[in-house]
Image 1: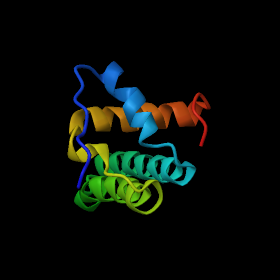
Image 2: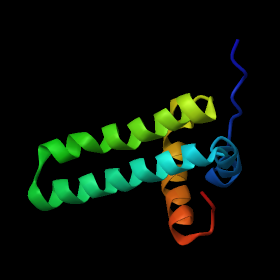
Image 3: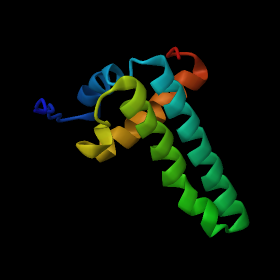
Image 4: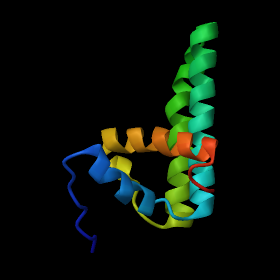
Length: 104
């Protein structure tokens, strides 16, 4: 039986929930790695017009993140129920981890 997922009216309302779903350090590290790789694949894809790199963006981004959820956090990725807010949360959390505003 699955618990009912909350609904949100704004990203500001969603983000505390998102962070709570990413409390495991390994999960955060995997998210960071996946987002960094996705950004690097995007840059490479644009610079070198590489279709392969563009195809690897979601593989890297979601692959690392979902591994963090399924194997370490043991919860369902927010992407399944809140895809836009989840993507926004990924990038905000990445920035906060990168700048030290949020710990690994």
